[in-house]
Image (cartoon, rainbow, N blue to C red):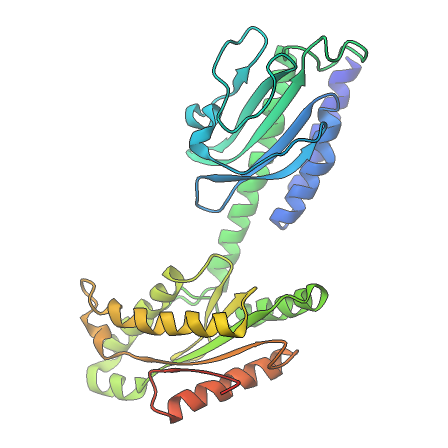
Length: 340
């Protein structure tokens, strides 16, 4: 009875903290605090899915030191079947390809973390065989009991709800922070993100870059083809940027026909190459069905990087604006860096 009460209390505390998490990092910290308390005699690891990819990274582990590695979803029977998968003891089933354990020493216990059709992660537990744990208390040794299975499933459910809550929170924030015409972030939201990035890199000394871009002769385009055509250009340009940036990058509608990009962990030279690539890819956009209006669109871009071109938001943006001005004054449809 005391064991059950203790576990219910721990689960309740974990769930309570989970609902207050604002980021994935906080979620990992909560899991790292409570999972070892819920399963103190077991070895375990929590895997989290990488964005929209069917790839899982170890986020939290405890117990026996083991070389936990990332893996694809197809390497786990539990993820394939969307149900708990047990190997060892009286379960003579093939082990998951992602596991590496001695069935004589452990029973492997994989619990998928799902929400409707979405798979969010995996809780993988290794339960010591009775002969391995005979010196210790009887709790949590040998084959998992029904109570053990329920506890592990409940813990996985709580963590899945936590991740769903974070995902929904981010989606709601994104909706309120995005420009309705282009789908890119608003200028204010982008500048807030730039301020946070500046604080972060001052501690870690990581590089990052900003790109300021402008649609060439946009006013003349509007006069010639009308506001409806120019609205289509902005819509398609916003979609183009979102499709061709990394998940960690941020695109913003910075002005009427001006866009700004924030590229974390990116040097000046890398940012310049990526800007050139975007400029060239832009020409291919007009070849797609229904995109003929993009044939007349070219981009001028200015690139600046931290810390070489400034250590404040004002200095970095002035450097990027100066580079953009140089690009427009030297012929347009080109990329210039602040160094130029």
